[in-house]
Length: 196
Image (cartoon, rainbow, N blue to C red):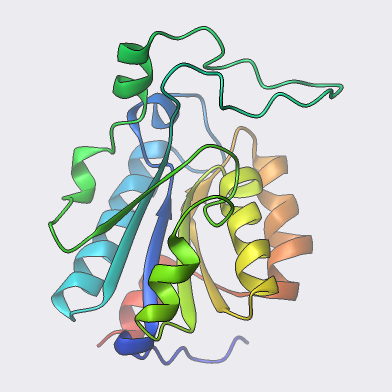
């Protein structure tokens, strides 16, 4: 049985990865995007009500030229030939997150939210030592951000049912083999219960 969570709001940030128009509208598993968004929105609202730091992360490009383009066996094709207007629409955060002025928006151009952004700086300046992570895709944006956070010395909590991926297998691989080694894995309800 997992230990009960104790969350210190002054030292914990809620970080949602890539809950944006161009990503949530795909076929996802094991959870539907609507369920992931609803859970993420509940967590974001609970953190805001308690004065905690909320970070909403999206991925975009002005023209596709600054996206990752390594020589790989299975390149990611989405977004390569989009216009600036299409990129802008694709990167819009979902309205259910109820973005507030106090939220920090981090725009990334690769899988993880730390590399090439001010995320680490903003967390450290606020004395944050714990990150509650969720988003899409579990095995790409969420896992890469979790690995980076762990290597930077942050404590990590994964809201497992506020994450999903292109397939249940990809999600479950992160949940079973990666996250237990670098984070605590909880459901949205377990996290909300810890906030009471």
